[in-house]
Image (cartoon, rainbow, N blue to C red):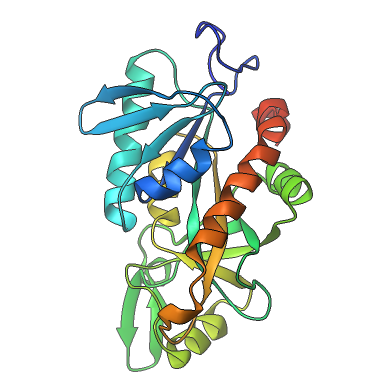
Length: 249
């Protein structure tokens, strides 16, 4: 996943991977798939964790804005160091849309979409693209998405990014009406994808479902189970990522 010059770390000919999570507990869950003592590398505004034979890990912060800023800082630092990343993975736990993505399941994004980037009008919500600006969707490499789904059992579909976690049945129904392929929601994927796109780097998003999207019910959360699923997924992902050739997708 990293450059051959970094002795003792798992390498391919070209693939160096950055995994961006929101918070340290998600970062640590990913790191558990790569046992051994981690080293830390500090760059302006960020700290990277490097587990043995694993990707670089970044706890990028909560929400799309901070996730984008932190990921961009990591990508810029790597480029300036002469060791750019070939893939960015947005990873963590998130809400799943029942019944398609139950608690404990995995979702890999074939579309990373900003759910609330746009304008409310008298005729309903307009995404920012219909206002003539920017983008609301990033598409991960299709071949890689398929390989991840096959290796981990994750279901492929749209993962929504919002600045506010859904807390009502009405909001969940509205999101599914706007995005009928949506399987999960998180708060960072689109921000990570925007930073990756600005650097011309492919992006992937993987979510372990910790709760249903809908009414906010802490008793229904299974955060520990979702974190364990995230660890298990990255254990299965290692051979996929190290054999993936960006030029094939």
